[in-house]
Length: 355
Image 1 (cartoon, rainbow, N blue to C red):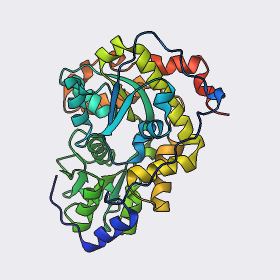
Image 2: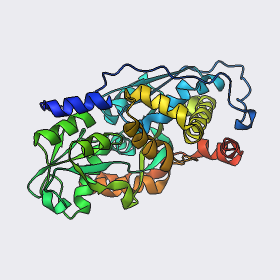
Image 3: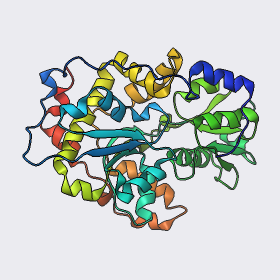
């Protein structure tokens, strides 16, 4: 992570918005009773005890809401699971390392890390995609009005190999320039650090996740590339499983999927509760910040039936193959498995959550 000095103006703004991570986490009101029976009851208990499930997420944005809401709403317990949810910093690649070492069963990660894992010889399985669109935005300093204006300049992203890295490269290429040839790429470590890099002038553009767009606009930066508007099918965030766990404990995975899709329904239908969860995990009560995060990750783009698809991953393979031809040899049918989402969809469970 680069040691960018944050000016007083940025510090004051981040403290105001609560995005520096120092605000105390407010309590989230858990539901006093289980959701209505129409949401479908938990599966019957089996004789064999279910394994304890460890799940991790990585980003500091509200793209991670399904795991957070499921945990806060008591949905894992509702479906008979003992689930430990934690954040692991260091990007999706770090989460993959922990998972493949056997210390995680499930993880919420973006598809770029999955492709990288396969190129490295690993074999995890993507079983759901709750955000099937590239939900990042490039913000730029005054004077940079088009991507072409970045020629000979620099753009920041969080870390190499992350969705932010993909987004930066995709935005530059979409604007007719070459990443790392026409435009330099600078890893900063996180959204807050990207804002600091922009304000210090060390970079002229940066990739940001909602709700950090709110702080960017207040600091005087403007939207350069709105990546969701480009219509790219993309697994921005979803659910990844270790293959051995999937094979050995399909019942536990299906129970988790019930909690996961019910959390999605809760997010979509219970905005006040979702905002409480966001307030806790983002560490802010700024209304504009919370609204920005909810609009992107809780409303408009959140998939009701979170199917992972070949089209989502094909966009990654096509892009990665430009610098690593081995990506063309990867088998997408092995990389994704939609049977758990499909089973709930076909039995009417997902439709039953919306009433």
